[in-house]
Length: 484
Image (tube, one colour):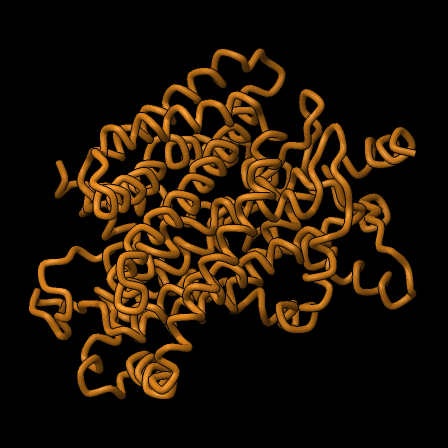
């Protein structure tokens, strides 16, 4: 059975997927004239504007929910596995997919705002919604919603809980069973409180954990600052087959860099738009820009922190395609959190293992929270117009069971199942946003024109001729009148 899953995973993440991720991101970067550079200032300023409402959350809370999903196991264990299979050059390709992926993140998140709905007093949106409203293909929206439910509630939570259990067992000797039960209990207390409670938890935990992790990585870099030129040279040489040791695995560097980069930053994956749709903003492009910046935070800051800790200390292994080792500095150590734990231990003995385990707990736990919210949104889509209480309860039980199961199963099968879930969503969403990108590009131009006129941009779907943007036609003005 495990070999069956491995085969499916290899098909989903074959070369066409790599080219599609890179190609779509580059296409959107070009047609938006690299908004990820031009609008960097706006991205930062917009994060802290806007307030939550009864129906939605603030831009910062939506960003925190999205970062909850982005900043997770992929930043610690994922970066380590990218270096294990692709060598140091994989880090460059993680940076590359983050930079160009910001374009994809903008488009999908802006579409989520354009086509969002107000359901049961809450803003709901995401790929299933914009697929149905933008293309008229309800079957495609249903297919994505089902795929997202399976991926977010059943396949991917196990990767996060497995990493938590592995880290805590390695650092403190805590049984994975005990860890699994603890995670389930804490998670249940939060997810039964709804999106508002998820947003409140995320907005406090996410910034705290990211800043603390980056500060420790900076300490390790400073202690080994003389290695900076050599490490940067190693990353770039390995990425372009110039390094004598890693030159023969450039294909693996690109493949694993893109795969782990997409897993971590989620640009184009279709997860970020769910949180983006929940934001209370006056123009869809505003939240699109905020969500684009979250890709930078995830990969260029947090993933880079992990990569630098590992590479500066030399605490890693790299395996060749034939199973031999190009680098074997940690003999017998499985690729994952243990690389980062060993790296921190070299500078802070007795601290590193526990620090990484605790960091991983917060990173992965908040990611599971985000997974629940995404799965909930897709259940809401599938049950529109019907009583959703029983399906929502079933969702909670399924996700909690998947979390516990993931805590006690092997890491290899956890990553394989997670990659399958991710791969299905990426294929469906990337094709969708390629078809539907025009309203998002139009929204960007409208935002830029209003900014040039010195106005605070406000979206007018009727004026722009965007069909099925029902919220912006019927309810936006009403919500503003009620707020005032």
